[in-house]
Length: 170
Image (cartoon, rainbow, N blue to C red; front, side, top):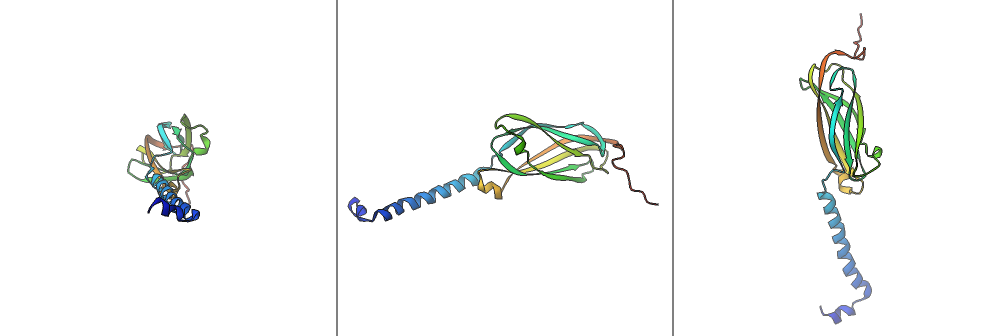
């Protein structure tokens, strides 16, 4: 096609022939960037269970420092495993994005839970899987980024002030 024949085409057609491929490339490119972006919008720097030695039924806290890179959402699935590998689920919660006001700054967060009754004495571990997505990433809303953590603690013999009292019927 020569320049003279190109100029004979209507302005609407000329614009359409340039705008349509541009829009197509932008949409496909944006979706590709979102699909390949598997970076977590937050990072856990450190974590610890307080107190590290507990008894069944005792309330404990998981303290951790988090750096938020962008606004995000998601859910946090939590569970505890005991020395025998028994899994004790803890109530799932939303992520802590709303609690963290600044991005790029390390901030300490606390999650509380009680040691499950019936847990075996010995080494135990707190596990969580955070399924998170960046607010701007459409693809991550359907395929969130999973971040798994595990922190150990020790369970000693005993129960916490009647928290695990057995229901005895006679």
